[in-house]
Amino acid sequence: MPRLSPIPAPTSLAPQPDEAAQSASTQSQSKKRELQPAERFALRVGASTIDGLGVFAEEAIPVRRKIGELRGESISVREARRRAKGRARIHIVEVSETRAVDATDSVTALRNINHCCAPNAVLRISQGRVEFYALRDIEPGEELTCHYGESHHEGRLSCRCGAANCSGKL
Ligand SMILES: [Zn+2]
Image 1 (spheres, rainbow, N blue to C red):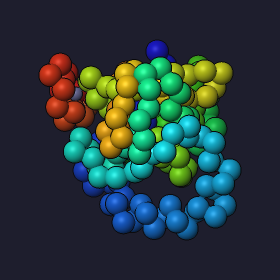
Image 2: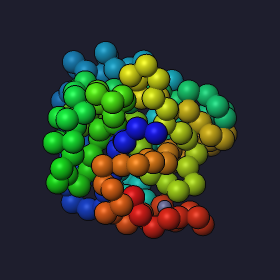
Image 3: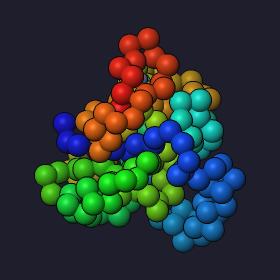
Image 4: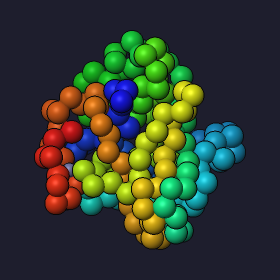
């Protein structure tokens, strides 16, 4: 598993919901059109009970279906690790030994996916793309979650996912 980190962390650096909505709308003219196919199902970004913002299903997503992709700036792994340092919220996924995707400035809803120790979605790297698939049938209104695996946070953050098997760390 590559080191990855779509990775929200507790607290303050993330935009608050209205701030996020504002920046999304200012970017929407140029970016939303080009990024639209990134999502196969209707998704919504909103306040999460796990951490900060989360991404929620707006319609039912059947098990094993592709939910969408995380898109962003293509950067080197070296640059990714430099950027990840000291950030509480990291939206970077390493997609190979040398390349990473930084979705920090992307409007892709899936960049807000939270970690859960008992997730309903899985992140897969495929030919440099970061894809999410449903691990089970997901109901409208459910928050989407995935297991971050090894992350840039390197176990420094506590997990608040609330799953019965929660490891307590990210
Ligand atoms: Zn957990």
